[in-house]
Length: 76
Ligand code: SF4
Image: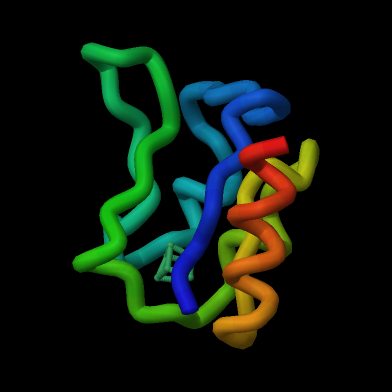
């Protein structure tokens, strides 16, 4: 399952540890938007990034059920 970023709490700092730890380049800082972005096609589904996000904005779903729950939670 992929990663979900909660932009309500993401601080999108340059040098974000979650971005730095992703050696697949699936999480990256986008200068034009000023935000951390996620490229699902590059993601290897390792889940490492979620452990490096201090505000816990980056979440990794381990199952389809968890993915659906996270999506619902972010929709409010
Ligand atoms: S799950 Fe792994 S590959 Fe995917 S964005 Fe996170 S660190 Fe990168």
